Amino acid sequence: MISLYDTSDNISNLEENEKKGVSAFRFIIMSIQFLIFGSLLLFFFGAGTYMILSYTMFIDYPNNCYIKVDKDILKGNRETVFKALTSIKNNDSQAYTDICKYVDTISEASCLLGESKSGKLHPIATDGCYIRGTKTIFIKPDSSNTDNAVSLRKEQILKYSVMSKEYWSNSANQ
Image (cartoon, rainbow, N blue to C red; front, side):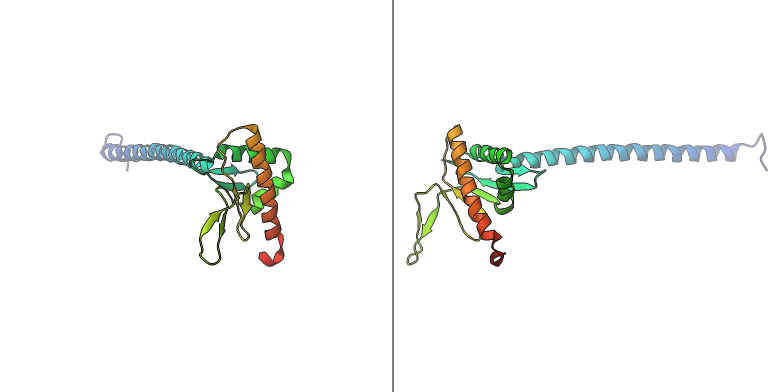
C-alpha cells in the first residue's frame, strides 16, 4: 500500500531511474562522439590514400579505369602521361575504353632486348614497346612538359594499347 507520508522507497526508485537515464544519455553521447571520430578518421585515411594513389596511378572511378604509371626518376615525367590519358578520354572514348581494359601499367623505361646466348639485356632505340602476355606498355622516358610531348605520349599509348588489345582479344590467350 502506498502512503502519502512514507516516500523512502519511491525516492530510491526515482534516484535509480535518474541514474539509468543519465547513463543511457552518456552512452548515446559517447556513441555519437565515437561515430563522428570514426567517420572523420575514415574520411582522412581515405583522402590520404586517394592522394597517394592518384600520384602514382591514373584513376577514373566512373569509367572503372585504374592504370599504374611508373616514372623514370631522372628522365621521366608522369604528368605528361596523365595529360595524354585525359586527352584520349576526352577525344576517343572507344580507344579509352580499350586502354582501360587491356592496359594496367604504363612504364617510362627503355625497352630491353635480351640475347639468347648470354642473357644480357640491351636497350633498344625505339619510342616504346609492348611485351606480349602482359598488360604493360613501356614508353621512352621524356622529361619535357610541352604539348608536343603530351601528343607524342598520346600516340605511343594508343599504338601500344592496340597491340595489347590484339593479344588479349585472341581467344587462345585468355
